[in-house]
Image (cartoon, rainbow, N blue to C red; front, side, top):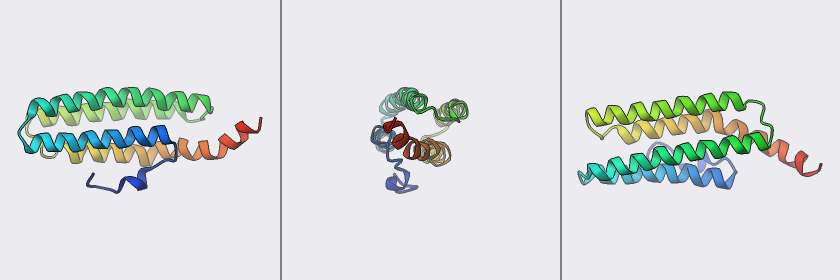
Length: 134
């Protein structure tokens, strides 16, 4: 990762942090494939990332439902917007070149984590002890 240290993006929810880490690792794979002009490999990695993101978003929603997160609707909309932005970024790269793709996708993911995911992670820290005591 180039734009930010991953530790600053950790939410404290191990499963979600691991999935975020894996998405950023896929960007490293994409960059490596671009350097070697392996555009089939780039496309495969991007397909994997979009698939993994969709599964990840579903898991996040389940976590939010289980904790009765009050802003789940906003987060669902944010996931839809994020997926559209990722697809647009990939489509633009396919039309021109892949050099700016990883920075653009990385930026989109970072913004989402820092703007939306931190909200439910903070909520989980405060609500989880209350749920456990019931």
